[in-house]
Amino acid sequence: WQRAIGVLQSMREDGEIPNLYCLNAAIAACEKGGAWVEALELYESIRSQRKSTIRTNFITVNSLLIALEKAGQVELAESIYQEAMRDKIISPWVRRYDNDGTLRRMMDLHKFSAPMAKIAVRGYLESLLSRKKKVIRGDTIFIVGKGKGSEGKPVLLPTILELLREEIGVDARVDKNNVGRIRVSGASVHEFIESKRWKE
Image (cartoon, rainbow, N blue to C red; front, side):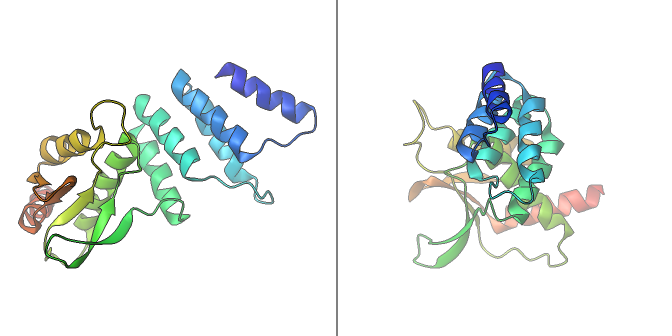
């Protein structure tokens, strides 16, 4: 990662402006090297250049979130994710056909890294706590894919199942008709909301 930062510094000293590809590569190098502070500084430097045509993208955010999760910076990672949602860099909600042919709103995580997917799921369920409307209609569906893009075994499916069952405590199950989807019943989500509100 130090070499990647050095290349960027050399480019700037020579009067060159690093493009987003170079900056994303440097953030990814920092992530792999455990240099989360440097990764964050690069991210902030891109965002601070208001007059520049260079803008952070999905790859920028994804690499940074991986670095932050490795460093245990959960709250900071969640803040960056919400920022990316507001900027429309990340948009996990899609409309897909369910098993019964009904067009449903689902959270599509299958292109997310495991850290980003976990933040997305936590954020959605926590957002339900502030809603006045308590009725949850139908299952909540998370698209995690079948692991074709993973090296070896699927990553997202077991990660999100464990998160939902162990950390959040809802009744999550793999869809029998589509193993790339996880379903959480409306009743289970409602119980989660009520238990959290009761504790508060």
